[in-house]
Image (tube, rainbow, N blue to C red; front, top):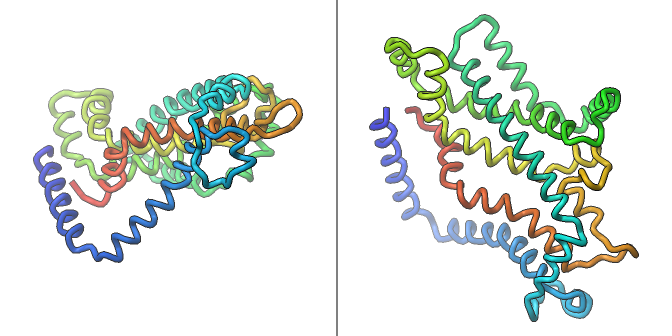
Length: 293
């Protein structure tokens, strides 16, 4: 299995090398333009976070800062309560990811590799959750959470994150699992491995890139959630980082744009760092389904 996967990776790398040589100049120019469009807003946010209030009032928005004003980050972190919002988002997101990864890996394994009656129907029910718009369920969920006393709690957000993250995660992992040969599982069973050993020692190691892909995608969705947090949480001490950005102003309602851009920089930094560290595995996880091992 490892030798086959290695040969496939060599073939893919060789094909990409050939394609890169034959890529027209116009195509490369288009890619460079797209990269510039994608990267420029991030650079602009970071540079703006170092500007003073006078620079925002007296100079164009595209101008460079004359000095690095790190006090914007101090103001955002303390006076803007970004420390509270950041902590809340981190707790909600990390706890949700633990449950999503645990449930989706086990469910996708059971729905793809285990044979039992009604398996296909259950898989279709899970996948149908992808087609349900989030807006439709806000009022029913709000009513349920209110009746059971879960409004203004982290539990309400975590339950919502996990429930709406499972469908896509199961879909991605199930698609990835289809290309893992059943012969590996059968050989392990013949050698005396039980179902738990098969899952922990064979399936999970082979699902590593798929799990990383789900981790990054779900982290992006949960960390940047605004709809659930605005609907189910109204207490300041429980607000997430995205809802906290909406109410960033001083006691007179004035906007400190330097601190606001610093807050935005703080909010996007975890996503950029996570993807920067795991982008290679994410690309492998997204493309591996196209290559049958």
